[in-house]
Image (cartoon, rainbow, N blue to C red; front, side, top):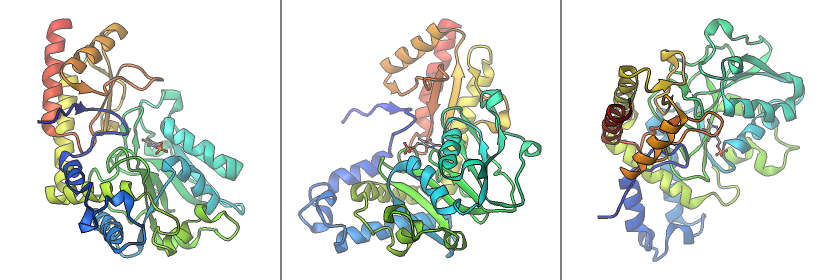
Length: 365
Ligand SMILES: *Cc1c(COP(=O)(O)O)cnc(C)c1O
């Protein structure tokens, strides 16, 4: 059997094995073409079927109403940080950004390059080192706002919005690290975007979902073509050459997710993983000290904790590696341990880690 590590990397991250095996089986002869999917035209009927299926599966899994468009773009969340203000914030329009972590801060900085002071901070937990989300009472949204931007899962800090912020204007959300981890009502959202490489596929695809009335408010004519959301929507994400192989893998992942029972089943797995992992931390709170201060804000995608000393953190990572568990070193600015438990991480993978944690406490606690 091929060696497969237990992968807790934060991104790019593990993919479901059946999605990779399907790619392996189809690699040399895709859809009877005698070529791999990487080698065929993005205008061919064989590729087109994959493109359409990736979009249809996104619609189906997320239960998207007909007034939402699915776009398959490039440039990661980083390019979206710029495209959003370019399309939606020029001409004196204003927006409110909720700053809850490293990525939210970056999104705000990029938006300010376009919108200047019209990009307002609705709330920030920087003073708390982003160890929690803002409470509803701390969030100030202007009545003149075009949208509220937030980051649904803070990949670095390990917080997650289990209840989305309330606003009377459209929400715009970076879902890079928790896209499709559960079903939710999309109707308050004008735009959702995220790089695929955490929960959905390989790097190179930026899944973007945009509500039609919100799309209508996008400016376009004076922007370079690639930066226009309207153009991508009109061309069904085939204006330029899309990242065909990435979209193909995305299709495989989504088809596999559907076979599991869709987002409800995936949510149940994710909740069980969280119960196991946080259960172990809460059993040994002085040994596995969580970074996040509010239990209600704990992420089910990225779990940050510190052992009693940095030396023990290092030993933990080293010993875990010997047991074939990789990707556990904390983000450089925070240190400690970060366990990323995206959709492709199984309940069994987390059980293995929790058993290891219990043994580690016994040996070193
Ligand atoms: C990883 C990540 C990003 C950066 O994604 P790129 O694809 O590298 O641009 C942005 N936001 C969040 C929440 C992330 O987890």
